[in-house]
Amino acid sequence: HEAIWVGLFDFKGQKLSEKIIEEADFDIEITDFEKAINGDGYILTALQGVSRDERGYVPPHARFYLLDETFNVVKDRAFIPAHENAIHDIMVATNAQGNQYYLAAGEARDTYSRAEGIVLSLDRHLNVGWRRSFPRGVGSRFFKVHQRSPQEIIAVGDVCLNKKRARE
Image 1 (cartoon, rainbow, N blue to C red):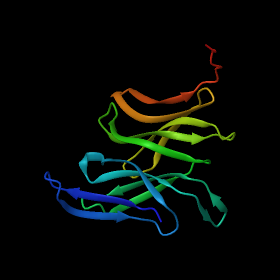
Image 2 (image 1 turned 135 degrees about the horizontal axis):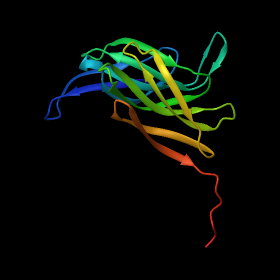
Image 3 (image 1 turned 30 degrees about the horizontal axis):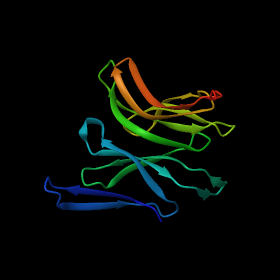
Image 4 (image 1 turned 180 degrees about the vertical axis):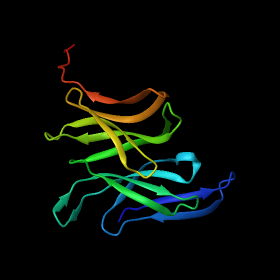
């Protein structure tokens, strides 16, 4: 049974406290951890393993957790747009009006099981504001997201190009 471990250490490496975040019905693996909006606690992204619900098979997908200052889960939300997905990076961004929100980058599988890079925004309550998919080549994945300005976002990842390599 996989769970997430969070440890607090002093600057000499001595452990001050620890917390285990787990789910009863499925495994979770951490993918990112950052300070939350306004520095009030933390946001953690995770990959939820395969599970079953009343409708049947649920593929691996991202989960978001808001934690307080002592790492207790305040709120959590699954991200299940339709197919298997993962979030690899999350950050706090600020729009032109000065409002803070979360930006996340990752990957999702399309209906043909190809990976496509995704970028999405979430409000402070983990509601998705918008989501954009960027299929490139045979498949793409985004691993980092950065806010360049209130109007521009940079996503960085990899792409599998459909090119034949020249023989030497």
